[in-house]
Length: 259
Image (cartoon, one colour):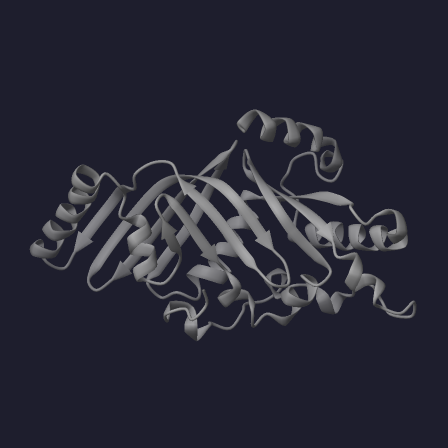
């Protein structure tokens, strides 16, 4: 599988190297790249039903999105960021809840990405046990209890407690070592992003060194439904992520009602 992903990544490298040789392009350039692809595919829609293009997103942009859509909306999370490498990434998370301050990290593989009008989901496979980098508690008993729970999971249950913790604070859903992160709750009130997902959808992604390569496809059906006089994609569609803060979402830590 890793050889296939490397082959696919190499095959598509030329598709975006000329976009930015340094992979440190600005957010506005990403948006210009996407809109250019949409207009290009629309102009030759009859022959482009299956056209797919690669959208590289830098590590800095991924972390910026995590801050805006997760950290800024979930009070218990003080910081969350990733380090992207070939075929895997390391996730760092700092939390503070009920008198407990913890900095943790773990390695993951990206299993699946689906971001379209109906589903906005990331699926990860946890590759290593969670490392506790820092731990402070408001009582010795609480600190001892946390250390015992971690030991019990690793030594007795032979699994990691991260999935259980993420489910308890309603961030993600675990199944064995697979973690499902549905980001719809953070995107659904951002009408500009949802509008864009009616025109462009992400089918899957590849993790590369310091960047995430998203395999993206234009939604021909929606574009063909527009009249010739309509603009295909306009500045009004530009996601709010690219300019200004979003309003905190109140249900970010409440129990999800979705399956």
